[in-house]
Length: 362
Image: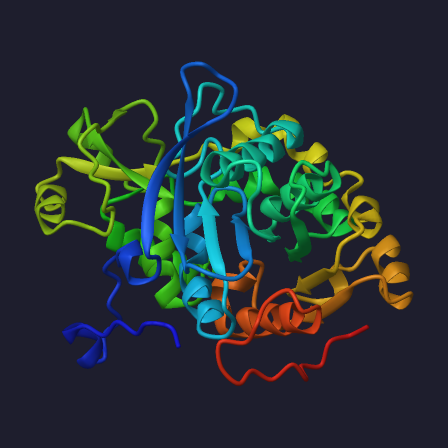
């Protein structure tokens, strides 16, 4: 079962929006040097488990590896597996030379390079699991066959048809959301209340990877906490490895010395948006691996996938009502579906008695 964090404010009936450390969910955090660059690009990874297949978890745009935290605990209680969740380039605490190169070729190469750096040329059996953009990267990584030990593919709420139709609205979404927050707690509260991540437990650990503390150059920055801050802040250099929230930081925030801003300026990645999703349905269908698709709603299925699903070319399950961040809002349900998929295809062994009779649509 996933961890439950209850503070005195919650006991009193008020939600506790304080951040939670990655340590509650993962066993280890590591910065891995990977890639052909002599200077070395460094990727932040979080791992858990010591045996079974390796589940490589790829987050969506703007998120980080921490979006998989609650899911990691949930899947680990169901099947024997290892988990490696990585911050993709330009996201979280990964530091690369070309941080705004979000092409599918570069990002799928990143995945292969990190796996090679961690496990050499003979990694354990790998199941690629990706959400949103991470799902598209998982499909491209599997299709490029850069991971010879890949044994399965799971994509969460990424469908070419609906994704390309929604691209025009992304810029509007980015413009309408707050540009900054007075504290990590405020960001978590916004995330839950806005519906970005409706599961409070997930938001408390996931938002830590989405925003960062910046030093305020002008006090006016806090007068308009949802206004543009790019002109009045510079990145802070004193962020600790454990980004779970520090009470001293909160004191400084209350004195008006810091503000939190988004780690990723997604608007700068617009030229890659179409390339992320164009052709992914056919690539997914052509991938010669056991495949599972989890969707937030049946309306997201496009024509190619509808035909493929009717032909039984992949397993599918719809998990409404869950919103786009399915694995964060319904981590237990997603873990249940993934565990059933792994057991059905004999890709993993049950940690305990796990039902494999979930109602998949085939």
